[in-house]
Length: 322
Ligand code: ATP
Ligand code: MG
Image (cartoon, rainbow, N blue to C red; front, top):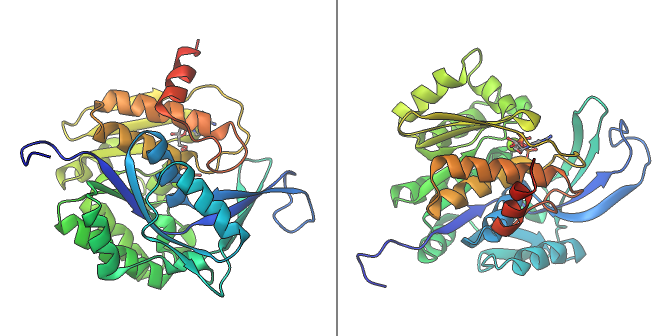
């Protein structure tokens, strides 16, 4: 490649790879014996990288699985969409990470996670990961706040993101805030630090309510854009999404009317569709439009990344809309 040619987009991410089991009955709170369906490949950053790959990006992921059947589920899934596995480790003697989700009639959900004491916590870190990610030519690196809940994972993720940012890699950050951790100054400082270096800042309504209490989207996005964020996009579930770009343009898109079978993962799928669209040349409005459709497709399938879609799937869905 000629030195003057633009670099092809390569998207990276890191963090917990999990298998997920979805309870088929409501209001069981993971306490009552009930049928569950799974294992599904999951983990917020895993959902993101799968969708980025489906959108046609070249992708690489730093993660770890156990030497067990669940680890194979995750390896098979990421290999099936060509996510580079040079930084995916198999850890002997610890099980693959897991999540159990149970939905409630009021729309809330309960999780039981096994992350910090599972293989998921042992993703490659430090110089090994930084050098391999840079050698892969990443132009954007995505981080989910779900990875920051454990102090060792948080410190490792922060070190990698800071080094990549210093090497001119754009950072994409979905805060995925865990409210119970907001009293922990180390966690909160990490969330603030990642917000400060992000090019793409992609919170949900709930995230924004705890990070910018009492502030309107207009208010907090103005501050973020002034501090260097290029895209602030608020994910609003069944309402849709609202975004602002570096020009100050604010756009809102209404959610598509779809049957909701499993909303978990729609946010990660939305983020990946938005980022992958921008890096492959889509303008802001088009990227928001595609991400909004990908989010709608994501909620329509059981399993956190089973509703992920290619650009062709998204176009088909949009053409079929009234
Ligand atoms: P999670 O963290 O569980 O992955 P999130 O809270 O980050 O999710 P959501 O706002 O739930 O993100 O979903 C992302 C996007 O997906 C929304 O902005 C919207 O475009 C689409 N979406 C989500 N829920 C629905 C729905 N019920 N109907 C249509 N579209 C939806
Ligand atoms: Mg989210």
